Length: 248
DNA sequence: AACTGTTGCAACCGCAACTAT
DNA sequence: TATAGTTGCGGTTGCAACAGT
Image 1 (cartoon, rainbow, N blue to C red):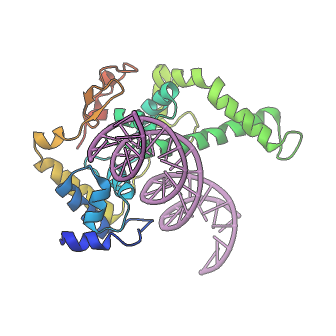
Image 2 (image 1 turned 135 degrees about the vertical axis):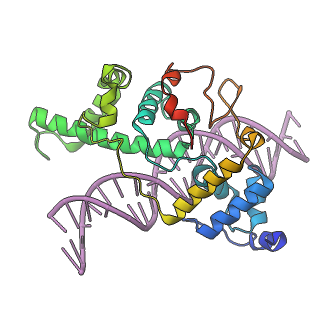
Image 3 (image 1 turned 30 degrees about the vertical axis):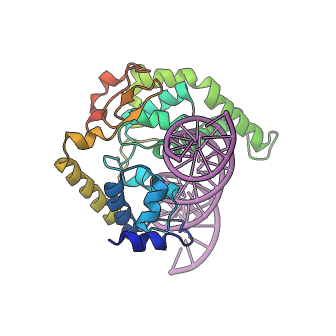
């Protein structure tokens, strides 16, 4: 790989949009070479014609080792909902609690969840009041009411569903929410190869490698985002959810 | 088969916070 | 201390894949 030529190419206009396999391979090589810092310098050196910001995002959200590319599990869903209730839209903070998940994953999941929940509540309101579209109430009124139900009235129900005796219903989707933990996972051949690549890397890696993956929690104590749980455990749930930490 | 609507998610944008000089 | 450059975060958008008609 020619460092200098790559640097010169990088001086021209930047590419945007979907990343190609060749770009991913190049990015992986340069991250191994230069580390996960100085993304602008890395982008220029690699000759990817991508911004440092874009390289960083691609690495963190997709190429980084130990990322999970499968569906959010029922257990993870439970934690996301609970932590969102506690912390709000602090996606990166929530992501630090869930090994192998990115803030983007969680953000996207939450939006999907919210959309489904909203649809369900709207359905309930319509059947409850016998509302028809465009009759008596505007749709925006109904949406606002649905939002209210989600953000206020359902909070206690969340607690009960998430942590109480009914928690099992989240796994089996028996509450009619339209959510299921049993989705089929579809991955492209390229993603499968990527996954294999990282699995083989993790098998070969040693302690020093994993010690690189550290971050700081809100109390500024060093934590490993992939393998450890912050000391200030917000929910006292981690000990009971051991399978979450099983990475392969 | 063709079209339309919906969904999931990758990637971008803008801004704030942080770091280096 | 001030400034410029870099990084991190949350919100938003665009688009491919899928489902329904």
